Length: 408
Image (tube, helix red, strand yellow):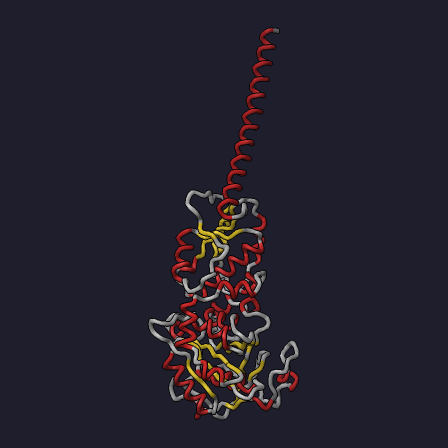
């Protein structure tokens, strides 16, 4: 009996020790988590963090960078988390895009010594310009204090639909230095003030013309004819066409053609050493009543439209003729629903040959077969899908080769 009692006592002691050990482990875990939460709250103002790595930051331009960051801010807000960037990425953002004085408001660098271990999710998209709801769903499922996510592209306005437009505009507020440059050296206030309406036409050629590029560059035929169409829809006394883009020589030749058509046109200058391309965004905020995007795959041009003063944007609905790019691109998730696609009845990518007998018909509905203006239903011509009057059959523009530059 004594031996049995000894075994029983040993078992009880062992059980008590295991219970105590388990309780201690639970207490240690809870204390550690509480300390982690407390530390995160004291450092970041929140105990639920979203730490993101943005893959295209190193290779993308400013339009791509702002898309990735603004979408990340939107995702953090939608999932109820505070956005944290790796300290090196935060520093690079601060240096590369120093012109924006409020860009990183409420975004934190990962401070040395803070524990960022937690749930890891790889959501690097293969499609540049589509909305992936799975990103938000996966983050919401995470109960970890810190959720680390690898992201790429995020070129859809739907990621930041929860952000007030005023907040986005504030984040993209330029420094006083850039504003002075725009006011003093770039915007010709005397010219702008003499016109009732400013039509800003964005073009992009440069890298879109390079070997291997899959985005469609701006071409003279679409730009000139689409500009003429939009120009004629403005019910004002005087419209100024402002050409914004990366190829000044080409734009100057376009401006000559526009002036020969009795349109007031100027090319927005580039002042070496004084200005930065984001000054174009400031011009758009200050002056652009209407925007026409002729190389619609350009994210830089997209932000010109989004930030524009008048918030009326037309765009070329053919960002690319490359099958792979079109597979990655969803226009309904890239272009806001209020923007107006401007289809033409012909593909206008061949700038070397123009048929003066043909007619270019612009419509906000896709034309599958070329028709004459008489064959197109007048209701389709007069109204877009929400019933706004856009143009009449009389505005169908004949393509006159004599009005185009011989070689651009």
